[in-house]
Picture 1 (cartoon, rainbow, N blue to C red):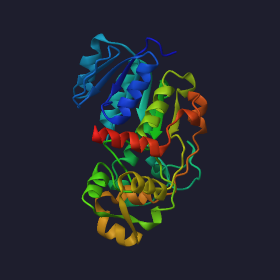
Picture 2: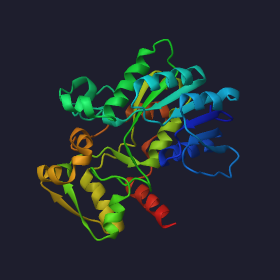
Picture 3: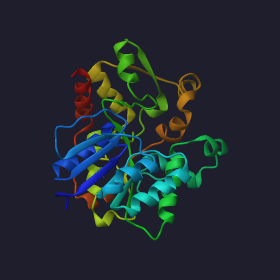
Length: 312
């Protein structure tokens, strides 16, 4: 199914894209990655191209190339721009995977399945609807993709937060701040209401594996999938790993006070995601990919893998 297939990853230079690329190379694919990062490869099956991925650039780049599959990792705020890109990609590949997000889900179904209500469809918060630019943009892109009923060679994936050496997420902390603050000896504040909530977080290697294994599966065409190895850890569990592995110290403070003092820059993601309970049912993606829990790396081991990259 995979041997000799040609795959294009758009915006695939981040950790998630790199793990998906390696999984595909291991399966025998030839993989090209368009990205802004300066990556090098000594594997003839893996090539990196440092370039923008505007529609015009994609048209020029693909003018003399054909790809059996494309995974598009980019985020589009401008829906009119995405529509043109989507039409071009679906017309020029056998299978297109579009990266949405688990953040499209509201907090109305536990565990979350792919049919769970989405925030775009149920929220009445007018300010959120006007100003939020990630979860809602992803949901609107999903709606557009589904409206193109004459073409169904697409798959929507909704990955959970993917931990990598570039991104150690803990509730509303992201990027490298957790590592930096720990090295500085800071006690890191966290909202107490999040401690016992299930965190939608996974190791990027698991996420990349799941996405790669959906490619070329006919059962995935015209479908959406939540992407998670489904370890269903609480934020308190994840914090405990960082306490053990890097000596991080946390202050689980009153949530209202935390929001007032620490969360104004990422208010929407905290209120409309991190303070939601996020247990996930991943039976649909396991059925189609054929993967099982034995194929995944435990979260603690994934964190250790990414921490080792910082030391290397």
